[in-house]
Image 1 (tube, rainbow, N blue to C red):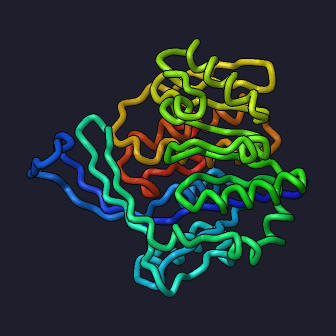
Image 2: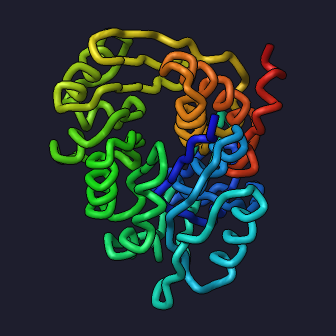
Length: 304
């Protein structure tokens, strides 16, 4: 069987991370942190996660013509990600994220989008053939919403499955939602999309009902340590989280999304794809950093 192709359209950033005992309140300085730099960005994280899970991955993105952009390209090449459609922006720097992580693994993030904000539909046209010949498209919301909508429309017309991780959280048009096959929001993203405060499993079901009524076939609401709720057409499934001691949750959602795509590309059901993704995300949160924390497929057996 020919390997199915996954195209990830999204951001790539360099993460500058400080691990401290606690997150500062406004106006406060917290001393005693540990600093490190890590490649990140939701698009790139999801592409690396899919590649390490064994997926055949192309990343469509935009970086600055700077040291961060050049480092990123080298890293993606080393992960066997196809980089032909990572464009260089001569006018803007590569994206940067400033991340603070506390001793419980909770984080707070500020992003300077840089070149990511200039990934336009005109760039997508240059990668049209790549999108047209793939099986799954995975996107997030750290690039312009017009670009996300444009890709979803192109792919949907070709009957290519479009998967959206609606992060960072924002309202989405009905036109975009009807072009999606799967949407994977977390609790707060599901609240924004549905108007339902997701406090428990029943509220997650209500939120999924409202979102799916706008034309999305499958809704997967991720609930962190409480697992995930799947609404597949008119059926509901609950997948428990794998219990681990969390150190850093920064890349958990991205690893989950990239892993779901690989499961689907391999012909697995959405239930089995989410189970695999939950295992990959569980390993991720036990490690520091974004891409440095992403597990390889062979590591999933360590949870058996």
